[in-house]
Length: 301
Image 1: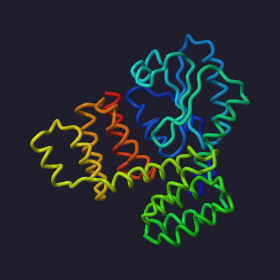
Image 2: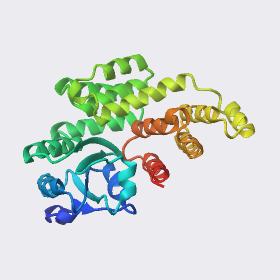
Image 3: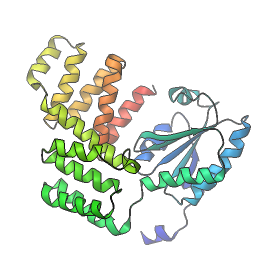
Image 4: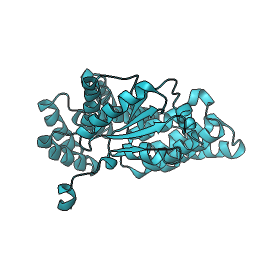
């Protein structure tokens, strides 16, 4: 293990080309661990030749905190179409399976550095508080809600803009049934972290907890679907009821089935609900990873 740490990583570990066949693995799945920058370019594009090397230099300087994937739009038109790339160069940033930032056109090196540093910070952590937050997460997972809340609150008092501490405290409040308190905490998050992944995860959990308060009976909804499999509202309601009972895997299955049957139903409600569930789960949760892969395979099919 120490030998791997001492060895200098190769540039290929951080920067690579991708294709339609490997996009899910190189971008969606890889971004579960570290932010991934996707550079859409073409050989005939002059600004792309200026941006590409400068962006690679900024990514290399980040030393593995960010990865970069290059997409030749001439050779991968389906990916470009799915992400609605209208001009190049266009750069997307993915983290934990979702786009989190983007820009078009060439930028000066200073702005590229700021862009990359911002992404690198998403996976970063203050070493002095990391162990305390890890312990609080363990407490939360074991049901020691009061103890977890105390640690999260202590870290938040020291660092009011620590998104992991704020998100953790909100999740502890949700687990304790204090939904109004959690909502107030989330809504009053400092602007600098209001859209951070950890805060968005807590917001997603809160939305699901609110839905659970009005969830219908699972057996009745199953009976309705047995008689009318194309009753999309019943299937959506069943997914909510299943999630409220803790059957997250089944809820995801029902929403994926709804998306397969009619992805545009109710303004794409199935996809939106899936994203809410994925956001509420931990980034490394196998249910989230598997669900994202299945949804992505449908979207990019």
